[in-house]
Amino acid sequence: MKFEKFMQWVREQAVDMGIPAIPESTGKFLSLFTYTFAKDKKFINIVELGAGIGYSVLWMLDGVLKAEEKCKIHAIERERVIFEKSREILKEAEELKGFDLNNYINFHLKDAEELKGDEFEKIDLLFLDIHKKGYYSALLKFEKQIKEKGVVIAHNVLSHQEELKNFLKEIKREDKYTTFFLETDPQGISVSFKK
Ligand SMILES: C[S@@+](CC[C@H](N)C(=O)[O-])C[C@H]1O[C@@H](n2cnc3c(N)ncnc32)[C@H](O)[C@@H]1O
Image 1 (cartoon, rainbow, N blue to C red):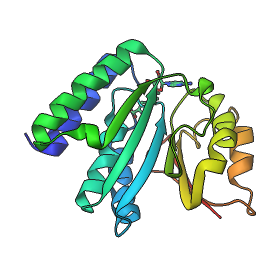
Image 2: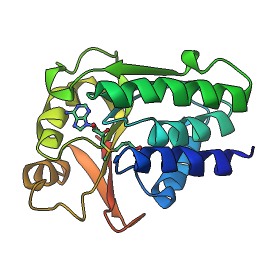
Image 3: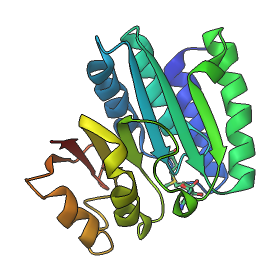
Image 4: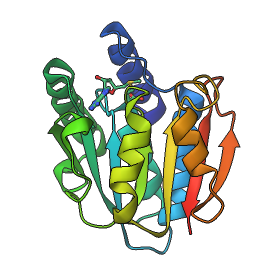
């Protein structure tokens, strides 16, 4: 099976479980972004808060592998049923790719609210897709761990501006970040480079 067809199947599995996985257009953007971002870096450390069954995780991995670089993606999910499904999806993805993906991806059963922010060494890319109230506190907790010129990408920033008011104010701080807003899908994403 081709990768894109496989990813359509993964997204259908997520939707069947009631998980609002990112749209395919944003998945393809994440792949393109991680491709260019990882190129010549040899290794990047990625943390995703709100991993679902791994749809967005696999798009990010796709970009890193296309760049022929290595990464560790720490994928955080708080619901046990969803976490267990992500382990199954990882096995399916391994069959497709033909090698062990445990070197690249660690799924963690954890509520992002319970993390302190220093669990995963220095971070190159933080991707936020959790409950909306959690974005601001997650950013504050993790910002020290994000490398200089590291990136925070957040989903739903155009569709949930009121709920994300504090978070948006923070990523617009020009002393801290250079932020771009992109309509990769109607919910929109922000891409913030740490200064
Ligand atoms: C919008 S879905 C996105 C899933 C994934 N990013 C994707 O595109 O396939 C959000 C996921 O985050 C999980 N979640 C929400 N709040 C969370 C939190 N505080 N900690 C960990 N996971 C959380 C939900 O259970 C759900 O699976």
